Amino acid sequence: MTIKTGDTLPEGTLTEFIEVEQQGCSLGPNAFKVSDLVKGKKIAIFAVPGAFTPTCSAQHVPGFLEHFDALKAKGIDEIWCVAVNDAFVMGAWGRDQKVNGRIRMMADGSGLWTRALGLELDLVDRGLGVRSQRYSMVVDNGVVTLLNLENGGGYSVSDAATLLQQL
Image 1 (tube, rainbow, N blue to C red):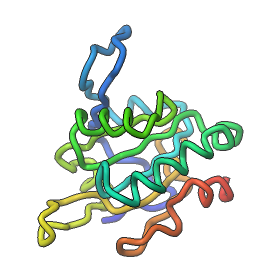
Image 2: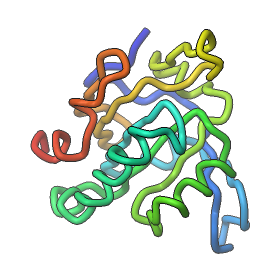
Image 3: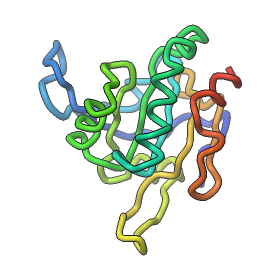
Image 4: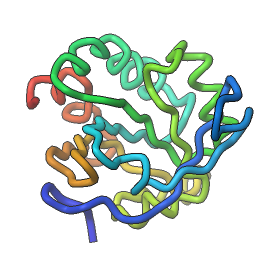
């Protein structure tokens, strides 16, 4: 069953590669419960089929970086990029994209949380395994308030500019 506006996010764990050791987070991959991360926050989440892929690297991440300040001005506390990749890959992609802490590069390595959302994308026949559909959403204290799900492999509604207009 696909998540929809008004639903509460399912339980799950995402990992993030931490570049600088800090209290409660060691250097390298750290696992976080989604329910803990979203408490009391308004978060813009966008998901991509994979790190370092053409549309994701050339348009999706750069768009959220470009609109970072405007999204924050609209009350967004955090921006997450989620992909069915491991935390090492997501960390390297974040460095490559120069996110510098503006976007949390969240790994769903086995796609379990993506599956719980009902947003998996089967690309096994293309040799890419099971990935995430491309989407954007706003989550307020764990509840989905906006959801933009792409049709097929498109990139027309999950971009940062569209999400910004909706806020």
